[in-house]
Length: 54
Length: 314
Image (cartoon, rainbow over all chains, first blue to last red; front, side, top):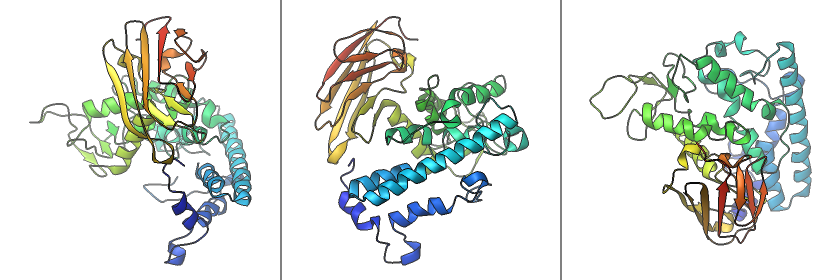
């Protein structure tokens, strides 16, 4: 590992933070990418998260 | 890119099921992305990566040549460059059209703005805090590998609105009591942390980067005009694996360049890869030469190599 933070990653890989839904695990966050594939032909869907649609 | 990074993390924690899930999801999403992009490019006869995956640039704000969003596919997500570092498959229009997209965008700006600015955002269309970051895709290209550093040089010379501080979008320089050239106005924020992070990442990656397999890539984005006799390019304290640090210097002679590495714990090959090396290596004091990519591949324990040019870089 580049940073040597393997223990940190293991601790948070499948286990959410204490706040629950607002602190998802690494695994839950990654799986959200698949859930976000709501665009044409299975690409990631449009959002308006920063300045404009993208 | 997130799936490629997640796959790497799953490998590191030993979760074979999630490695497989991430591999499959990455491949499926890449295939879908390639299908949609190819369809848009074919339907509208485009020569470039559109800033929307489902529209030509003429159908949205990117029709304005000064709107730097034309270069969004070359920065945000940074897939073409970073996914390669993680050993993930990189194919399709997103990699094939990098050269063409830079050529298209800069071609539209010729005569409107100086070289090496991508434009800005309403209503300050001169440059942006992302100007270096927009060069990130160039590291995965064959003709624009030094674009990140060229964009950063433009920012330092033309668009600082405070010491090491840039607006998200900046107007053209105007007379001011301060030494140097500084924008008359700007919008977004200044300092702009995201732009600064993008700029520093592309600068460091242009000098020194590491793949997840341990291979080190040295000098991939160094402009030819940096290779001036008696000038030394140096990187110190570069974080490599397991908390270890490396340093490197690249020093130029009149017809050669010498790389020296110090530090320990290298886990892969060293790929000395200056853009000026492409089809231009006469000889190397050690390692193997790949002319097409301008690479001298050295063993993990190598400490120095001198590479002689066929033609002096410019």
